[in-house]
Length: 176
Image 1 (cartoon, rainbow, N blue to C red):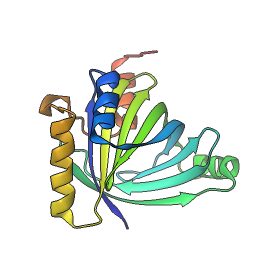
Image 2 (image 1 turned 30 degrees about the vertical axis):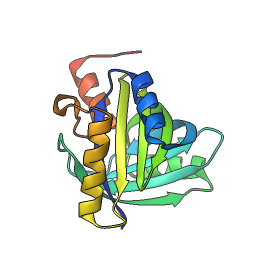
Image 3 (image 1 turned 180 degrees about the vertical axis):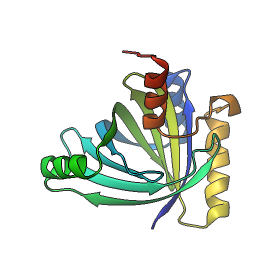
Image 4 (image 1 turned 120 degrees about the vertical axis):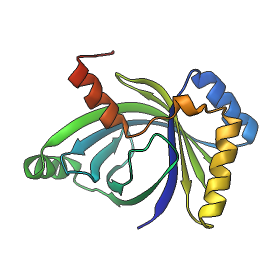
């Protein structure tokens, strides 16, 4: 399975994050409107990602929910019949939660920079450094991105957007 080094943090300013990506010379890949349906699969994650006007993919991943930089192993499969797959997996596993977001995607070296607005949660920045040239290179690039984007340790989030949404629901917190 491919491997990423990942970090997710709350963002005080999406505008500042966009400026920083531009200053770095990161390549803007576009704006993606995504709907992720997470299925009830235990500790591992399985989600169907629908990207408006584009493609649909099934993503399986395994990673710790640490509030720090963390490694993730994953598999991505394109889906040609998303409605059928969603119905089947909903029956097999049940739906855990649905996450809707607008993602501005940048590429910098072997890193994906996600500047996200998540419905019901707010604004975030996420880095996914593909482990292509060894873990040392991935960790060095992650440290560089953290420094350039001024990511404070206190803003780093463990878990996925689905975890945060579910925690809020349990606490009775609902944002627009």
